[in-house]
Length: 378
Image (cartoon, rainbow, N blue to C red; front, side):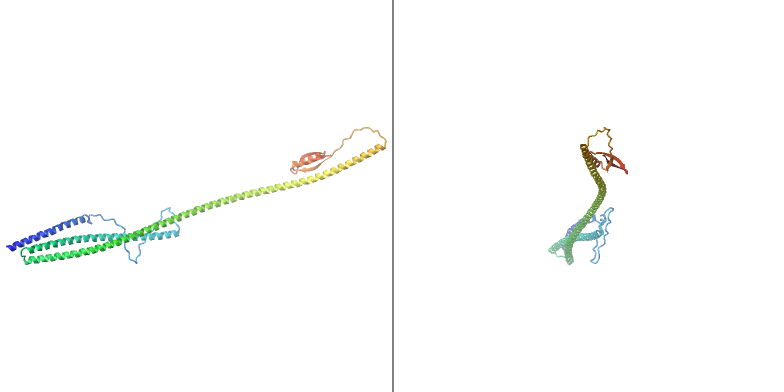
């Protein structure tokens, strides 16, 4: 009777201990599963597909990226600049793809590290629960040892249960250690991936800077080309202005040459008129000298006649003659010069008048030209 009651008491104590160990564990498992059920794949919407990033082998080449077509109306740079820009864009695109790949790898490794850390924490919790169960079992064994003598079957069962719990605790400890090691390894990989992502991000920024530099150089080259084009247009306009000025100067030179030729012809005409006037003056001078010689001869004849008359008057007696009416003296006229310029004719006329010789100017037409001739009377 005592043995049966002792076995019943030990069994009840073990049952209470098992209930105290497993009921909180079951409740904690339900609490742990509830967030996973809320975020189960069936209830969560499919994530937005991101660009597929493939980690190519060292021997493989990255996929080619098609360069976008330039918009309509955009000025296409020269062939050399296009090739250089396409190469720069290809390098920038390759760097961007590599940076995206490294970033995706870093995110993937960080996610794996978080999963490994969560798994390690779960293993740690299981190990703690297993240790608590082992401690309860040990306490139960101690209680059962302090109690009355147990049966061989109860002790063997308790030992088997204790050994099983210890093995489970050892396995949980090993699993937690492996999980911790795996979490540490994943964390190191995540750190490496973050470093690679940072390097890829820096490379992407450098590629963007290079692209901006190439774009600035292309814009500067375009501005220089526009400046050269404007300079060429300005030089063309200046050349046209110079050509117009040259033509105008040529026309002015032709006008001056025509005026010079006309002036030369007028000078030749004036020279011919001067020579003619000089010849006329020489003729008039010869006529004047001839007239003076004639006047001197007449004066000498008159004086000689006066002397003869005086001698006759002194030697012969005076004679009484009848007074007769004086006969009019006949006068003759002649032309002493013809002039084209009226001033020359006036000067010639005045010269004869100063000598008390009647002189007049007559305007006549000779061969369709108006000529001034000087006529004198003696």
